[in-house]
Image (cartoon, rainbow, N blue to C red; front, side, top):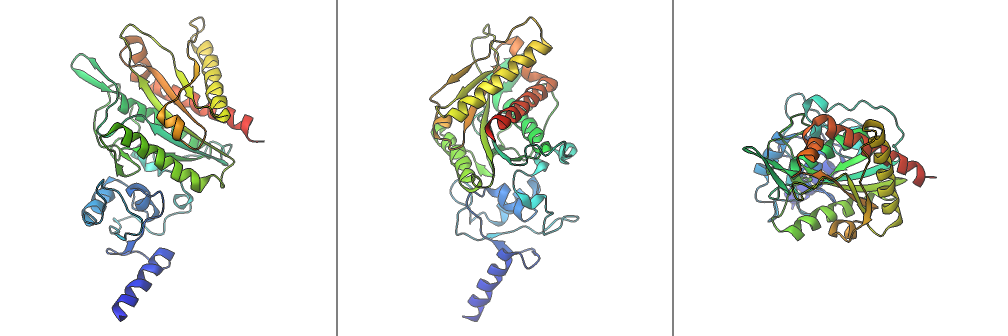
Length: 338
């Protein structure tokens, strides 16, 4: 009885944050936690901590390799140079900046104009699903790698403007990359949870994750939006511009229209005379239909078309797309927040 009482008090004190963590300390996850967010709360950041956590808790994880509410998990010991409690910035919520890669993990604020805004950024496909695949010589180009790179660039831009940002699909090994040909992998997770093979299960998992976060965040922020970034796949001869799909929600439509209009201006500025054929359309897509916050899905080009591929193969172009999407979010924010 005394041993049981001591263990209960120990875990309660640990959860309250009173005691410094040691090698075999434990904690319960909170609603919406994946492995990444759970470890981040205890300032265990990086893929080495994830690997240690998975090994320590192999018998505690659910069938999908994720966390279960009500289950207590062992926390890996701190690495040399790391400290707990985390800094105020780390404790404030959102995705850990280390996901952008070592050289880009420090976020230098450019403004606080989006300090009252929260964003959920989903990159299409991932894990066992590469999405659209194109062949260039002996190389395979996978949609999920390029969508993920653009998602990270957008997330970082928004964070530099003071926003709280959650990157829903994450790869612990791939930060922002400037390569033309991005290496393919299947390491992506849904905020630390393995991505299912079944298509409907994959979509439901990311939608559920966003909706869980939204239930928690909707009273904290003046403006919340979600975006799902993709690369289209069509006939090789079909050249397309950027498409913006929205749900029946009026805020979703406004965001899609605002983003399309800004892209129109940017194309006219940087490629005068070319014209811009991107359009806005309501689509009954699973993700748009089930996401609770106002959301859009963006198709950034045809991966099969040689000219469209230039839009995604060039890191400068990927950054430009991210810059324009971030600017469009701010324009929509100004229209929506009174």
